[in-house]
Image (tube, rainbow, N blue to C red):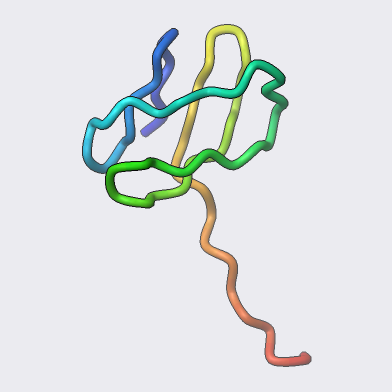
Length: 60
């Protein structure tokens, strides 16, 4: 579920997420409350979704 607001909140714990002035699509923002990472899906208005998990490929 994505979040589209001017002041985005963490999708896990509802803590406000600080947004840098130079925000770009695909940026990753971390919640200062719980550490959950969010991916920027849109910048006007700011829309976030949970960042995808990075899986180890173990050299495959």
